[in-house]
Image 1 (cartoon, rainbow over the protein chains, first blue to last red):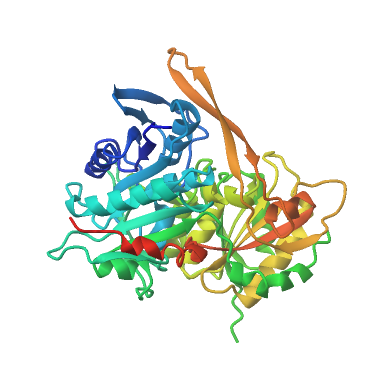
Image 2 (cartoon, rainbow over the protein chains, first blue to last red):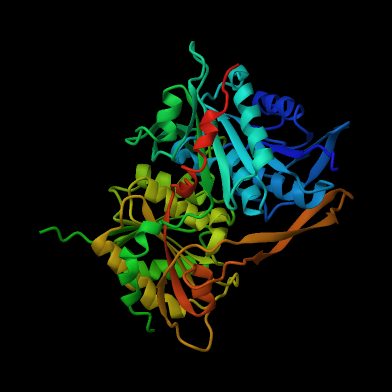
Length: 261
Length: 261
């Protein structure tokens, strides 16, 4: 009988000191052996970027029974690659990322380093889940997430996930009411409307300071944005196949175009 | 009658000096007014990352009849955001990115700064196309691409693209035979199998040098990899909705899990 506890790899994009990461570590340690690899710096909005032109480094910072922690100078995607291909003694049974300070619901997922790490794991055949909370507050209250994170994680450890599919799990910010439940949903369409404020640095040189707001005309039942705005947990089965399948047939007429020199 | 020529915004992720970018500029100038915003540095594998913690700068480097060129210290996604929201006098009719030195076919698209820029444009409702050639050679021969790029671009300028859909166009490397034609296809599944070679820098400190190869068990008819390996141009209609729709119903049982504190 194999009595080995599952090996769970944890990463995030808010840096090693983030409260959300520490919470996720505490929860995962109740379920198995844990290996953490986090980034030296905050890596928000690093998406799926990885390091190809700089020297990638990682170092062991803590080791105790059923627990190791590494730190890396790269991106969350680098962390996953390096951990499972080089640093860990065996292939992890699960990769979890987060808990992100800030939502990764709707199309904002494309910017997410948290979900980038999850997709990298998924591309390599590993079961993977990203957890995010809808507030940027570094001291956010994560207490209302515990049960749900444990329940979802236990289910994935037990059943696995379909090939090419990972989970993007988004939580609403804590409010006076308890969470209403879980909704399995699709990713809402949205975009950032940005303001680039013109500013001048100490040398009088112009730079642009980015701020903006999330705009969506797609907050309809069945979407992740609708779920979290109604105090549900949003679970989006997520893939790395970006083909717009409905457009393959309508666009077949592109095949008539000339390619002759 | 509106006789204004279309405004075409061009960016890339290989930096402003790349041969592929210069080729794309020359082609687009035959079709309309052109605005270029390229990056100071090579931004390969920057995916959809954008700049939120550093000072973003852009400067005008060239201006002549029907042509402006800016340079930016950010990522390709920053370039698109900044250009259309701040730098250009009107909304571009089309955004094109590339011509990338290196393929963005199959799942490698998730790492691509070239396609990151295209998706950013698409999220903001702009028609957008990414062009990539299957060789990393900085002095690559792009001559066999001209007709196809012009034909595809003219068609998109005339007809537009469906909402939420952009084009990821990949070309095979030049060979002895002429291109066979265009295939409208789906993105093949693949992954990088990486080797992290342990190396030591001048201070004796360990770092990891990344190399690897693309591995796919999905080079089947109907995929982009199959197309380019058979000397066709691959056109993949691409979206930023990453929902794995086929899994929403099978995963509804996640809604039975407890969320109680």
